[in-house]
Length: 204
Image (cartoon, rainbow, N blue to C red; front, side):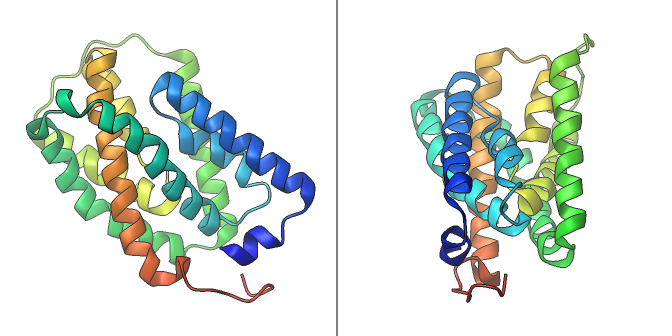
């Protein structure tokens, strides 16, 4: 990781700092989207693996602060299906991150960003979805796969909370803690696979 950062040009470093600042600002206002905004900038000069690692590291800090402030409103029983699903999904996503070619993963992340942006622009008016804990668990698996592979740890759960029709403040007590949990699982599962292993320049 240090080698990758050292290889960046001055313009890239400025863009990196600007992207990080904007992503943190958006998260502070909206409560999510750090990885979405940051990845849109970082992927221009960093590999998908390094981008995912940085999203996890920064996301833990930014989302961790928000979750601490929300700790009294968090309901563990509601989070449990999503967490159990993430336990299954994150290892799959981490494997995909290391098996998939950088080009294919970069395109996949781009597709996810485009679809999520379209969803937020259109905001279709749908009746609240009626679903149980099994459906929440399935969403947790899908969210874990995407989070483990890209670092975008809360996209699926964020959309799901909206579809469920939960109030905005109530949504934040779900997707933010789940995001932090997926970040932790992704980081724990990936450190042993090379994120923290020093590499010589040119070997990335």
